[in-house]
Amino acid sequence: MTAAATAMEAVAQEQGLLVLAADDDEIVLGLVVYRLEHSGYRVIAAHDGEEALTLALARRPALAVLDVMMPGLNGYEVTRLLRSYDATRALPIILLTARAEDADSERALDAGADEYLAKPFSPEQLRSRVEALLARAA
Amino acid sequence: MSAEEQPQPWATPAISDRDRLQVVNHRLTAKIGKLEKLNARFEQKHHALRASERQFRLLFEQNPQPMLVYEQATLQIVAANYVLAESYGYTKQELLSMRITDLVPAEDVELLTTFFLTAAHTGPWIGVSDGFADRTRRHQHKDGTVIDVEVAGDSLTVAGVSCRVWAVTDVTERNRAEAERMAMAEQLAVELMGQNERLRAVDELKDQFVSVVSHELRTPLTAIRGYLEIVLGGEPGPLTPEQQRCLEIVDASCKQLLRVVSDLLLIGKSEAGQLALEIAEVDLRALLAECVVAAKPSADAKLIELRLADESAIEPIAGDYGRLSQAVANIISNAIKFTEVGHVDVRLLAEPERAVVEIADTGVGVPATEVDHLFVPFFRASTATREAIPGAGLGLSIAKEIIDAHGGRISLETQEGSGTSIRVELPMAVAG
Image 1: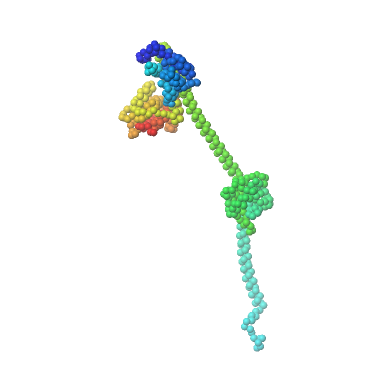
Image 2: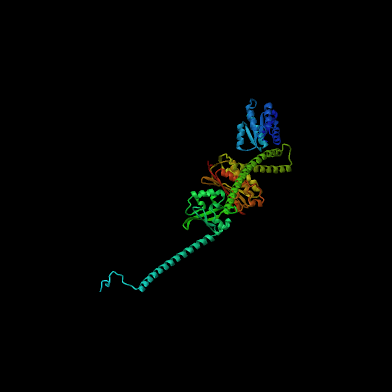
Protein backbone atom coordinates (compact mmCIF):
# COMPACT_ATOMS: atom_id res chain seq x y z
CA MET A 1 0.00 0.00 0.00
CA THR A 2 1.33 3.44 -0.87
CA ALA A 3 1.92 6.14 1.68
CA ALA A 4 -0.95 8.16 0.20
CA ALA A 5 -3.24 5.17 0.48
CA THR A 6 -2.23 4.68 4.07
CA ALA A 7 -2.93 8.33 4.71
CA MET A 8 -6.39 8.05 3.10
CA GLU A 9 -7.04 4.95 5.15
CA ALA A 10 -6.19 6.86 8.27
CA VAL A 11 -8.63 9.59 7.25
CA ALA A 12 -11.33 7.01 6.49
CA GLN A 13 -10.73 5.34 9.80
CA GLU A 14 -10.90 8.61 11.61
CA GLN A 15 -14.05 9.74 9.89
CA GLY A 16 -15.40 6.22 9.84
CA LEU A 17 -16.99 6.77 6.47
CA LEU A 18 -19.96 4.48 5.91
CA VAL A 19 -19.97 2.36 2.76
CA LEU A 20 -22.84 0.15 1.59
CA ALA A 21 -21.83 -3.16 -0.03
CA ALA A 22 -24.45 -5.34 -1.74
CA ASP A 23 -23.97 -8.76 -3.32
CA ASP A 24 -26.07 -11.92 -3.16
CA ASP A 25 -22.90 -13.99 -3.23
CA GLU A 26 -21.89 -14.26 0.43
CA ILE A 27 -18.22 -14.94 -0.36
CA VAL A 28 -17.72 -12.02 -2.73
CA LEU A 29 -19.67 -9.82 -0.33
CA GLY A 30 -17.32 -10.97 2.44
CA LEU A 31 -14.34 -10.05 0.28
CA VAL A 32 -15.67 -6.54 -0.38
CA VAL A 33 -16.51 -6.05 3.30
CA TYR A 34 -13.09 -7.32 4.39
CA ARG A 35 -11.22 -5.07 1.99
CA LEU A 36 -13.22 -1.97 2.88
CA GLU A 37 -13.27 -2.58 6.63
CA HIS A 38 -9.53 -3.23 6.60
CA SER A 39 -9.11 0.02 4.72
CA GLY A 40 -10.80 1.88 7.54
CA TYR A 41 -14.39 2.17 6.35
CA ARG A 42 -17.46 1.19 8.26
CA VAL A 43 -19.42 -1.18 6.05
CA ILE A 44 -23.08 -2.13 5.97
CA ALA A 45 -23.84 -5.25 3.96
CA ALA A 46 -26.95 -6.03 1.92
CA HIS A 47 -27.76 -9.37 0.31
CA ASP A 48 -30.16 -8.26 -2.38
CA GLY A 49 -31.31 -5.19 -4.24
CA GLU A 50 -34.23 -4.31 -2.00
CA GLU A 51 -32.15 -4.53 1.14
CA ALA A 52 -29.52 -2.35 -0.51
CA LEU A 53 -32.13 0.25 -1.42
CA THR A 54 -33.62 0.25 2.08
CA LEU A 55 -30.23 0.49 3.77
CA ALA A 56 -29.08 3.25 1.42
CA LEU A 57 -32.15 5.35 2.23
CA ALA A 58 -32.13 4.58 5.96
CA ARG A 59 -28.40 4.78 6.73
CA ARG A 60 -27.29 7.31 4.11
CA PRO A 61 -23.84 5.82 3.37
CA ALA A 62 -21.04 7.88 1.77
CA LEU A 63 -20.74 5.40 -1.11
CA ALA A 64 -22.35 2.21 -2.41
CA VAL A 65 -20.72 -0.82 -4.02
CA LEU A 66 -23.47 -2.83 -5.76
CA ASP A 67 -23.32 -6.13 -7.57
CA VAL A 68 -25.26 -6.11 -10.83
CA MET A 69 -26.61 -9.65 -10.74
CA MET A 70 -28.85 -9.73 -7.68
CA PRO A 71 -32.24 -11.40 -7.27
CA GLY A 72 -35.26 -9.09 -7.19
CA LEU A 73 -33.94 -5.63 -7.95
CA ASN A 74 -30.65 -5.89 -9.83
CA GLY A 75 -27.77 -3.46 -9.51
CA TYR A 76 -28.88 -1.34 -12.46
CA GLU A 77 -32.39 -0.98 -11.05
CA VAL A 78 -31.17 -0.10 -7.54
CA THR A 79 -28.85 2.54 -9.06
CA ARG A 80 -31.69 4.03 -11.10
CA LEU A 81 -33.97 4.16 -8.04
CA LEU A 82 -31.27 5.68 -5.86
CA ARG A 83 -30.79 8.38 -8.49
CA SER A 84 -34.51 9.18 -8.30
CA TYR A 85 -34.51 10.03 -4.55
CA ASP A 86 -33.25 13.40 -3.37
CA ALA A 87 -31.46 11.82 -0.43
CA THR A 88 -29.37 9.51 -2.61
CA ARG A 89 -29.26 11.39 -5.93
CA ALA A 90 -25.57 12.25 -5.49
CA LEU A 91 -24.53 9.02 -3.77
CA PRO A 92 -21.31 7.72 -5.37
CA ILE A 93 -22.03 4.27 -6.76
CA ILE A 94 -19.67 1.55 -8.01
CA LEU A 95 -21.31 -1.33 -9.89
CA LEU A 96 -19.71 -4.77 -9.96
CA THR A 97 -20.44 -6.37 -13.34
CA ALA A 98 -20.05 -10.04 -14.08
CA ARG A 99 -18.90 -9.37 -17.60
CA ALA A 100 -16.10 -7.23 -18.89
CA GLU A 101 -18.15 -6.43 -21.94
CA ASP A 102 -18.73 -3.03 -23.39
CA ALA A 103 -22.49 -3.46 -23.21
CA ASP A 104 -22.28 -4.04 -19.46
CA SER A 105 -20.10 -1.06 -18.78
CA GLU A 106 -22.38 1.10 -20.91
CA ARG A 107 -25.44 -0.16 -19.04
CA ALA A 108 -23.73 0.57 -15.74
CA LEU A 109 -22.99 4.15 -16.70
CA ASP A 110 -26.42 4.59 -18.32
CA ALA A 111 -28.08 3.47 -15.11
CA GLY A 112 -26.26 6.29 -13.35
CA ALA A 113 -23.29 4.55 -11.74
CA ASP A 114 -20.11 6.57 -11.29
CA GLU A 115 -17.80 3.62 -11.84
CA TYR A 116 -17.95 -0.04 -12.70
CA LEU A 117 -15.61 -2.92 -11.95
CA ALA A 118 -15.72 -6.15 -13.93
CA LYS A 119 -15.38 -9.42 -12.06
CA PRO A 120 -12.92 -10.77 -11.19
CA PHE A 121 -11.65 -7.52 -9.77
CA SER A 122 -8.73 -7.03 -7.48
CA PRO A 123 -9.64 -5.90 -3.92
CA GLU A 124 -6.86 -3.36 -4.12
CA GLN A 125 -8.40 -1.99 -7.30
CA LEU A 126 -11.75 -1.69 -5.51
CA ARG A 127 -10.17 0.08 -2.59
CA SER A 128 -8.46 2.63 -4.79
CA ARG A 129 -11.67 3.28 -6.78
CA VAL A 130 -13.63 3.79 -3.56
CA GLU A 131 -10.99 6.12 -2.25
CA ALA A 132 -10.81 8.12 -5.49
CA LEU A 133 -14.59 8.44 -5.73
CA LEU A 134 -14.90 9.60 -2.13
CA ALA A 135 -12.13 12.11 -2.68
CA ARG A 136 -13.98 13.42 -5.73
CA ALA A 137 -17.27 13.61 -3.85
CA ALA A 138 -15.75 15.43 -0.91
CA MET B 1 -65.91 -71.43 -165.46
CA SER B 2 -69.14 -70.59 -163.84
CA ALA B 3 -69.62 -67.64 -161.54
CA GLU B 4 -70.02 -69.99 -158.61
CA GLU B 5 -66.76 -71.51 -159.41
CA GLN B 6 -64.93 -68.10 -159.57
CA PRO B 7 -62.61 -67.69 -156.63
CA GLN B 8 -63.77 -64.71 -154.31
CA PRO B 9 -60.90 -62.38 -153.35
CA TRP B 10 -62.50 -61.57 -149.86
CA ALA B 11 -63.33 -65.09 -149.02
CA THR B 12 -61.24 -66.70 -146.27
CA PRO B 13 -58.83 -68.96 -147.85
CA ALA B 14 -59.73 -72.35 -146.97
CA ILE B 15 -57.50 -73.91 -144.28
CA SER B 16 -57.44 -77.37 -143.31
CA ASP B 17 -58.76 -78.55 -139.95
CA ARG B 18 -55.34 -79.65 -139.10
CA ASP B 19 -53.92 -76.22 -139.65
CA ARG B 20 -56.72 -74.66 -137.62
CA LEU B 21 -56.04 -76.96 -134.70
CA GLN B 22 -52.41 -76.10 -134.87
CA VAL B 23 -53.16 -72.38 -134.68
CA VAL B 24 -55.43 -72.91 -131.70
CA ASN B 25 -52.76 -75.03 -130.13
CA HIS B 26 -50.18 -72.28 -130.57
CA ARG B 27 -52.47 -69.72 -129.03
CA LEU B 28 -53.26 -71.98 -126.10
CA THR B 29 -49.61 -72.70 -125.55
CA ALA B 30 -48.84 -68.99 -125.52
CA LYS B 31 -51.64 -68.35 -123.03
CA ILE B 32 -50.53 -71.22 -120.86
CA GLY B 33 -47.03 -69.82 -120.91
CA LYS B 34 -48.34 -66.45 -119.78
CA LEU B 35 -50.48 -68.04 -117.12
CA GLU B 36 -47.57 -70.08 -115.94
CA LYS B 37 -45.46 -66.96 -115.73
CA LEU B 38 -48.26 -65.20 -113.83
CA ASN B 39 -48.66 -68.18 -111.65
CA ALA B 40 -44.95 -68.28 -110.93
CA ARG B 41 -44.99 -64.58 -110.10
CA PHE B 42 -48.05 -65.06 -107.91
CA GLU B 43 -46.42 -68.00 -106.22
CA GLN B 44 -43.34 -65.89 -105.64
CA LYS B 45 -45.38 -63.08 -104.16
CA HIS B 46 -47.41 -65.51 -102.14
CA HIS B 47 -44.25 -67.04 -100.78
CA ALA B 48 -42.85 -63.65 -99.95
CA LEU B 49 -46.09 -62.70 -98.24
CA ARG B 50 -46.19 -65.97 -96.38
CA ALA B 51 -42.59 -65.48 -95.36
CA SER B 52 -43.28 -61.93 -94.26
CA GLU B 53 -46.37 -63.04 -92.34
CA ARG B 54 -44.42 -65.87 -90.80
CA GLN B 55 -41.75 -63.42 -89.81
CA PHE B 56 -44.31 -61.04 -88.34
CA ARG B 57 -46.03 -63.87 -86.51
CA LEU B 58 -42.71 -65.12 -85.24
CA LEU B 59 -41.77 -61.65 -84.14
CA PHE B 60 -45.17 -61.16 -82.55
CA GLU B 61 -45.51 -64.60 -81.00
CA GLN B 62 -41.96 -65.03 -79.84
CA ASN B 63 -41.48 -61.46 -78.71
CA PRO B 64 -40.37 -61.44 -75.06
CA GLN B 65 -42.47 -58.32 -74.62
CA PRO B 66 -46.21 -58.79 -74.13
CA MET B 67 -47.97 -57.72 -77.37
CA LEU B 68 -51.51 -57.62 -78.66
CA VAL B 69 -53.48 -56.39 -81.66
CA TYR B 70 -56.98 -54.97 -81.39
CA GLU B 71 -59.51 -53.55 -83.79
CA GLN B 72 -59.50 -49.82 -83.56
CA ALA B 73 -63.26 -49.41 -83.98
CA THR B 74 -64.44 -52.08 -81.58
CA LEU B 75 -61.42 -52.35 -79.25
CA GLN B 76 -61.78 -56.10 -79.74
CA ILE B 77 -58.55 -58.01 -79.22
CA VAL B 78 -57.71 -59.91 -82.41
CA ALA B 79 -54.28 -61.24 -81.47
CA ALA B 80 -52.14 -61.59 -78.36
CA ASN B 81 -48.76 -63.17 -77.97
CA TYR B 82 -47.79 -65.97 -75.67
CA VAL B 83 -45.95 -63.78 -73.18
CA LEU B 84 -48.94 -61.49 -72.77
CA ALA B 85 -51.36 -64.39 -72.25
CA GLU B 86 -48.94 -66.00 -69.84
CA SER B 87 -48.23 -62.90 -67.80
CA TYR B 88 -51.84 -61.67 -67.69
CA GLY B 89 -53.06 -65.18 -66.77
CA TYR B 90 -55.52 -65.63 -69.67
CA THR B 91 -55.59 -68.25 -72.43
CA LYS B 92 -55.21 -66.90 -75.93
CA GLN B 93 -58.77 -68.03 -76.55
CA GLU B 94 -60.01 -65.95 -73.66
CA LEU B 95 -58.10 -62.94 -74.84
CA LEU B 96 -59.60 -63.16 -78.32
CA SER B 97 -63.05 -62.81 -76.79
CA MET B 98 -62.07 -59.71 -74.79
CA ARG B 99 -61.76 -56.01 -75.49
CA ILE B 100 -58.71 -54.08 -74.36
CA THR B 101 -60.89 -52.27 -71.83
CA ASP B 102 -61.12 -55.65 -70.08
CA LEU B 103 -57.39 -55.44 -69.40
CA VAL B 104 -57.59 -52.35 -67.20
CA PRO B 105 -58.97 -52.11 -63.66
CA ALA B 106 -62.74 -51.44 -63.62
CA GLU B 107 -62.27 -47.93 -62.24
CA ASP B 108 -59.96 -47.03 -65.13
CA VAL B 109 -62.23 -48.17 -67.95
CA GLU B 110 -64.03 -44.86 -68.34
CA LEU B 111 -60.76 -43.00 -68.39
CA LEU B 112 -59.29 -45.29 -71.00
CA THR B 113 -62.40 -44.98 -73.18
CA THR B 114 -62.24 -41.21 -72.89
CA PHE B 115 -58.61 -41.41 -73.82
CA PHE B 116 -59.44 -43.33 -76.95
CA LEU B 117 -62.16 -40.85 -77.85
CA THR B 118 -60.12 -37.74 -77.25
CA ALA B 119 -56.51 -38.66 -77.87
CA ALA B 120 -55.11 -39.18 -81.30
CA HIS B 121 -55.70 -42.85 -81.75
CA THR B 122 -53.55 -43.20 -84.81
CA GLY B 123 -49.87 -43.30 -85.58
CA PRO B 124 -47.17 -44.39 -83.21
CA TRP B 125 -47.19 -43.31 -79.58
CA ILE B 126 -45.60 -44.41 -76.43
CA GLY B 127 -47.70 -44.73 -73.32
CA VAL B 128 -46.86 -41.68 -71.31
CA SER B 129 -45.85 -39.22 -73.97
CA ASP B 130 -49.46 -38.13 -74.49
CA GLY B 131 -49.46 -36.60 -71.04
CA PHE B 132 -52.53 -38.58 -70.09
CA ALA B 133 -53.35 -39.42 -66.50
CA ASP B 134 -51.28 -42.04 -64.77
CA ARG B 135 -54.32 -44.29 -64.58
CA THR B 136 -54.14 -45.04 -68.32
CA ARG B 137 -50.93 -46.79 -67.41
CA ARG B 138 -52.49 -49.42 -65.21
CA HIS B 139 -53.44 -52.92 -66.36
CA GLN B 140 -55.05 -55.76 -64.49
CA HIS B 141 -54.17 -59.43 -64.60
CA LYS B 142 -56.84 -62.10 -64.56
CA ASP B 143 -56.17 -62.75 -60.86
CA GLY B 144 -56.86 -59.07 -60.12
CA THR B 145 -53.24 -57.98 -59.73
CA VAL B 146 -52.91 -54.40 -60.93
CA ILE B 147 -49.66 -53.53 -62.64
CA ASP B 148 -48.13 -50.31 -63.92
CA VAL B 149 -47.43 -50.46 -67.62
CA GLU B 150 -45.80 -48.45 -70.33
CA VAL B 151 -47.44 -49.01 -73.71
CA ALA B 152 -45.95 -48.43 -77.14
CA GLY B 153 -48.64 -48.47 -79.87
CA ASP B 154 -48.89 -48.21 -83.63
CA SER B 155 -51.49 -48.60 -86.37
CA LEU B 156 -51.68 -51.50 -88.77
CA THR B 157 -54.27 -52.92 -91.17
CA VAL B 158 -55.28 -56.54 -90.91
CA ALA B 159 -57.45 -57.89 -93.73
CA GLY B 160 -58.58 -54.37 -94.55
CA VAL B 161 -59.51 -53.62 -90.94
CA SER B 162 -57.82 -50.78 -89.04
CA CYS B 163 -56.09 -52.18 -86.02
CA ARG B 164 -53.63 -51.10 -83.36
CA VAL B 165 -50.72 -53.08 -82.10
CA TRP B 166 -49.57 -52.66 -78.51
CA ALA B 167 -46.28 -53.61 -76.92
CA VAL B 168 -46.65 -53.54 -73.15
CA THR B 169 -43.85 -53.16 -70.60
CA ASP B 170 -44.53 -53.97 -66.96
CA VAL B 171 -42.95 -51.08 -65.01
CA THR B 172 -44.45 -51.93 -61.61
CA GLU B 173 -41.11 -52.88 -60.13
CA ARG B 174 -39.39 -49.89 -61.67
CA ASN B 175 -42.07 -47.53 -60.35
CA ARG B 176 -41.95 -49.16 -56.95
CA ALA B 177 -38.18 -48.78 -56.83
CA GLU B 178 -38.54 -45.21 -58.03
CA ALA B 179 -41.18 -44.47 -55.39
CA GLU B 180 -38.99 -46.10 -52.78
CA ARG B 181 -36.05 -44.01 -53.89
CA MET B 182 -38.16 -40.87 -53.79
CA ALA B 183 -39.50 -41.77 -50.35
CA MET B 184 -35.98 -42.45 -49.16
CA ALA B 185 -34.75 -39.18 -50.60
CA GLU B 186 -37.62 -37.35 -48.92
CA GLN B 187 -36.97 -39.09 -45.66
CA LEU B 188 -33.30 -38.27 -45.96
CA ALA B 189 -34.15 -34.63 -46.65
CA VAL B 190 -36.42 -34.55 -43.60
CA GLU B 191 -33.75 -36.22 -41.50
CA LEU B 192 -31.11 -33.80 -42.74
CA MET B 193 -33.34 -30.85 -41.96
CA GLY B 194 -33.98 -32.24 -38.51
CA GLN B 195 -30.30 -32.82 -38.00
CA ASN B 196 -29.56 -29.32 -39.18
CA GLU B 197 -32.09 -27.95 -36.74
CA ARG B 198 -30.60 -30.03 -33.94
CA LEU B 199 -27.10 -28.83 -34.82
CA ARG B 200 -28.30 -25.23 -34.78
CA ALA B 201 -29.89 -25.80 -31.38
CA VAL B 202 -26.73 -27.48 -30.10
CA ASP B 203 -24.70 -24.59 -31.44
CA GLU B 204 -26.92 -22.07 -29.65
CA LEU B 205 -26.77 -24.15 -26.52
CA LYS B 206 -22.98 -24.27 -26.79
CA ASP B 207 -22.84 -20.48 -27.09
CA GLN B 208 -25.13 -20.11 -24.08
CA PHE B 209 -23.13 -22.71 -22.21
CA VAL B 210 -19.84 -21.00 -22.90
CA SER B 211 -21.32 -17.66 -21.91
CA VAL B 212 -22.98 -18.90 -18.72
CA VAL B 213 -20.02 -21.03 -17.65
CA SER B 214 -17.51 -18.28 -18.16
CA HIS B 215 -19.69 -15.78 -16.30
CA GLU B 216 -20.41 -18.20 -13.52
CA LEU B 217 -16.69 -18.88 -13.19
CA ARG B 218 -15.97 -15.22 -12.76
CA THR B 219 -17.72 -14.93 -9.41
CA PRO B 220 -15.77 -17.67 -7.58
CA LEU B 221 -12.62 -16.49 -9.36
CA THR B 222 -13.23 -13.04 -7.91
CA ALA B 223 -13.30 -14.53 -4.42
CA ILE B 224 -10.26 -16.78 -4.98
CA ARG B 225 -8.08 -14.08 -6.49
CA GLY B 226 -9.34 -11.43 -4.09
CA TYR B 227 -8.62 -13.41 -0.93
CA LEU B 228 -5.28 -14.59 -2.37
CA GLU B 229 -4.32 -11.00 -2.93
CA ILE B 230 -5.20 -10.16 0.67
CA VAL B 231 -3.37 -13.17 2.11
CA LEU B 232 -0.31 -12.66 -0.11
CA GLY B 233 -0.32 -8.98 0.92
CA GLY B 234 0.28 -10.21 4.46
CA GLU B 235 -2.67 -8.37 5.99
CA PRO B 236 -4.17 -11.29 7.90
CA GLY B 237 -0.70 -12.14 9.19
CA PRO B 238 2.82 -12.95 8.01
CA LEU B 239 3.33 -15.96 5.70
CA THR B 240 6.20 -18.39 5.90
CA PRO B 241 8.28 -18.50 2.69
CA GLU B 242 6.81 -21.96 2.01
CA GLN B 243 3.24 -20.66 2.40
CA GLN B 244 4.09 -17.69 0.22
CA ARG B 245 5.49 -19.95 -2.52
CA CYS B 246 2.44 -22.27 -2.43
CA LEU B 247 0.01 -19.40 -2.62
CA GLU B 248 1.93 -17.83 -5.50
CA ILE B 249 1.44 -21.07 -7.43
CA VAL B 250 -2.29 -20.91 -6.62
CA ASP B 251 -2.30 -17.33 -7.85
CA ALA B 252 -0.53 -18.23 -11.12
CA SER B 253 -2.96 -21.10 -11.76
CA CYS B 254 -5.85 -18.84 -11.00
CA LYS B 255 -4.60 -16.30 -13.54
CA GLN B 256 -4.26 -19.10 -16.08
CA LEU B 257 -7.82 -20.23 -15.38
CA LEU B 258 -9.03 -16.69 -15.80
CA ARG B 259 -7.26 -16.44 -19.15
CA VAL B 260 -9.04 -19.59 -20.36
CA VAL B 261 -12.36 -18.13 -19.25
CA SER B 262 -11.63 -14.89 -21.09
CA ASP B 263 -10.57 -16.85 -24.19
CA LEU B 264 -13.82 -18.85 -24.11
CA LEU B 265 -15.82 -15.67 -23.83
CA LEU B 266 -13.94 -14.09 -26.71
CA ILE B 267 -14.46 -17.12 -28.94
CA GLY B 268 -18.14 -17.15 -28.03
CA LYS B 269 -18.45 -13.46 -28.86
CA SER B 270 -16.55 -13.64 -32.11
CA GLU B 271 -18.60 -16.65 -33.27
CA ALA B 272 -21.73 -14.64 -32.50
CA GLY B 273 -20.23 -11.79 -34.55
CA GLN B 274 -20.02 -9.59 -31.45
CA LEU B 275 -16.29 -9.05 -31.23
CA ALA B 276 -16.09 -5.30 -30.79
CA LEU B 277 -12.83 -3.42 -31.30
CA GLU B 278 -11.79 -0.17 -29.67
CA ILE B 279 -9.85 1.35 -32.53
CA ALA B 280 -7.08 3.82 -31.78
CA GLU B 281 -3.54 4.47 -32.96
CA VAL B 282 -1.36 1.50 -32.14
CA ASP B 283 2.43 1.61 -31.96
CA LEU B 284 3.16 -1.96 -33.02
CA ARG B 285 6.81 -1.73 -32.02
CA ALA B 286 5.85 -0.82 -28.44
CA LEU B 287 3.17 -3.50 -28.46
CA LEU B 288 5.63 -6.19 -29.56
CA ALA B 289 8.22 -5.05 -27.03
CA GLU B 290 5.63 -5.27 -24.27
CA CYS B 291 4.54 -8.75 -25.35
CA VAL B 292 8.15 -9.95 -25.51
CA VAL B 293 8.91 -8.58 -22.05
CA ALA B 294 5.81 -10.29 -20.67
CA ALA B 295 6.71 -13.62 -22.28
CA LYS B 296 10.40 -13.47 -21.34
CA PRO B 297 10.08 -15.30 -18.00
CA SER B 298 8.44 -18.34 -19.59
CA ALA B 299 11.09 -18.41 -22.36
CA ASP B 300 13.86 -18.04 -19.77
CA ALA B 301 12.41 -20.88 -17.76
CA LYS B 302 12.86 -23.17 -20.77
CA LEU B 303 16.28 -21.71 -21.63
CA ILE B 304 14.90 -20.52 -24.96
CA GLU B 305 16.08 -17.28 -26.47
CA LEU B 306 13.22 -14.88 -27.18
CA ARG B 307 14.46 -12.21 -29.59
CA LEU B 308 12.84 -9.09 -30.96
CA ALA B 309 14.25 -7.76 -34.23
CA ASP B 310 13.36 -4.11 -34.12
CA GLU B 311 14.75 -2.91 -37.42
CA SER B 312 12.06 -1.15 -39.35
CA ALA B 313 10.61 2.26 -38.83
CA ILE B 314 6.87 1.91 -38.95
CA GLU B 315 3.93 4.28 -38.70
CA PRO B 316 1.31 3.62 -36.06
CA ILE B 317 -1.56 1.49 -37.36
CA ALA B 318 -5.25 1.72 -36.52
CA GLY B 319 -6.29 -1.09 -34.21
CA ASP B 320 -7.39 -2.28 -30.79
CA TYR B 321 -4.25 -2.31 -28.65
CA GLY B 322 -5.60 -4.72 -26.04
CA ARG B 323 -6.92 -7.23 -28.58
CA LEU B 324 -3.80 -7.08 -30.75
CA SER B 325 -1.64 -7.62 -27.66
CA GLN B 326 -3.76 -10.63 -26.84
CA ALA B 327 -3.28 -12.02 -30.38
CA VAL B 328 0.50 -11.50 -30.38
CA ALA B 329 0.86 -12.81 -26.81
CA ASN B 330 -1.04 -15.96 -27.80
CA ILE B 331 1.24 -16.57 -30.78
CA ILE B 332 4.42 -15.96 -28.78
CA SER B 333 3.17 -18.13 -25.93
CA ASN B 334 2.42 -20.92 -28.42
CA ALA B 335 5.86 -20.60 -30.00
CA ILE B 336 7.53 -20.92 -26.58
CA LYS B 337 5.31 -23.83 -25.60
CA PHE B 338 6.17 -25.72 -28.80
CA THR B 339 9.93 -25.06 -28.58
CA GLU B 340 12.26 -27.18 -26.48
CA VAL B 341 15.61 -26.01 -27.82
CA GLY B 342 16.61 -22.93 -29.79
CA HIS B 343 14.91 -19.59 -30.10
CA VAL B 344 11.76 -17.66 -30.89
CA ASP B 345 12.21 -14.68 -33.19
CA VAL B 346 9.73 -11.82 -33.33
CA ARG B 347 10.14 -9.43 -36.26
CA LEU B 348 8.28 -6.34 -37.35
CA LEU B 349 8.35 -5.46 -41.05
CA ALA B 350 6.90 -2.53 -42.90
CA GLU B 351 5.40 -3.37 -46.28
CA PRO B 352 3.42 -1.08 -48.56
CA GLU B 353 0.00 -0.38 -47.00
CA ARG B 354 0.53 -2.91 -44.24
CA ALA B 355 2.52 -3.93 -41.21
CA VAL B 356 3.81 -7.46 -40.90
CA VAL B 357 4.67 -9.32 -37.72
CA GLU B 358 6.58 -12.58 -38.02
CA ILE B 359 7.01 -14.98 -35.15
CA ALA B 360 9.26 -17.93 -35.93
CA ASP B 361 10.34 -20.74 -33.64
CA THR B 362 12.65 -23.73 -33.77
CA GLY B 363 10.12 -26.00 -32.12
CA VAL B 364 8.50 -29.34 -32.86
CA GLY B 365 6.35 -27.98 -35.69
CA VAL B 366 3.07 -29.44 -36.85
CA PRO B 367 2.35 -32.15 -39.47
CA ALA B 368 1.35 -30.63 -42.82
CA THR B 369 -2.04 -32.39 -42.71
CA GLU B 370 -3.00 -30.44 -39.59
CA VAL B 371 -2.11 -26.95 -40.75
CA ASP B 372 -5.64 -26.15 -41.96
CA HIS B 373 -7.08 -27.01 -38.56
CA LEU B 374 -4.71 -24.98 -36.44
CA PHE B 375 -6.95 -21.92 -36.43
CA VAL B 376 -10.06 -23.91 -35.50
CA PRO B 377 -11.13 -23.43 -31.85
CA PHE B 378 -10.18 -26.30 -29.52
CA PHE B 379 -8.07 -28.04 -32.17
CA ARG B 380 -4.87 -29.43 -30.71
CA ALA B 381 -2.00 -30.46 -32.94
CA SER B 382 -0.88 -34.06 -32.62
CA THR B 383 2.59 -32.81 -31.69
CA ALA B 384 1.00 -30.90 -28.78
CA THR B 385 -0.79 -33.94 -27.43
CA ARG B 386 2.20 -36.21 -28.06
CA GLU B 387 4.61 -33.88 -26.26
CA ALA B 388 2.00 -33.17 -23.56
CA ILE B 389 2.17 -29.43 -24.28
CA PRO B 390 -0.58 -27.82 -22.20
CA GLY B 391 -3.35 -25.70 -23.73
CA ALA B 392 -7.02 -25.60 -24.64
CA GLY B 393 -6.48 -25.16 -28.37
CA LEU B 394 -7.80 -21.61 -28.31
CA GLY B 395 -4.70 -19.45 -28.67
CA LEU B 396 -4.31 -19.43 -32.44
CA SER B 397 -8.04 -19.37 -33.17
CA ILE B 398 -8.38 -16.30 -30.95
CA ALA B 399 -5.40 -14.66 -32.65
CA LYS B 400 -7.05 -15.32 -36.01
CA GLU B 401 -10.41 -13.89 -34.86
CA ILE B 402 -8.69 -10.73 -33.69
CA ILE B 403 -6.55 -10.36 -36.82
CA ASP B 404 -9.58 -11.04 -39.04
CA ALA B 405 -11.61 -8.43 -37.15
CA HIS B 406 -8.87 -5.94 -38.02
CA GLY B 407 -9.18 -6.85 -41.70
CA GLY B 408 -5.78 -8.52 -41.51
CA ARG B 409 -4.50 -11.94 -42.42
CA ILE B 410 -2.71 -14.65 -40.47
CA SER B 411 -0.83 -17.49 -42.13
CA LEU B 412 1.42 -20.26 -40.97
CA GLU B 413 4.32 -22.25 -42.31
CA THR B 414 5.51 -25.26 -40.45
CA GLN B 415 7.67 -28.30 -40.77
CA GLU B 416 7.37 -31.13 -38.34
CA GLY B 417 10.57 -31.31 -36.34
CA SER B 418 12.08 -28.03 -37.45
CA GLY B 419 9.75 -25.25 -36.43
CA THR B 420 6.87 -22.98 -37.24
CA SER B 421 6.66 -19.47 -38.61
CA ILE B 422 3.51 -17.37 -38.27
CA ARG B 423 3.00 -14.26 -40.34
CA VAL B 424 0.47 -11.62 -39.35
CA GLU B 425 -0.41 -8.94 -41.87
CA LEU B 426 -2.28 -5.89 -40.62
CA PRO B 427 -3.62 -3.06 -42.74
CA MET B 428 -2.45 0.40 -41.72
CA ALA B 429 -6.10 1.42 -41.35
CA VAL B 430 -9.02 -0.81 -40.41
CA ALA B 431 -11.42 -1.26 -43.30
CA GLY B 432 -14.99 -0.05 -42.94
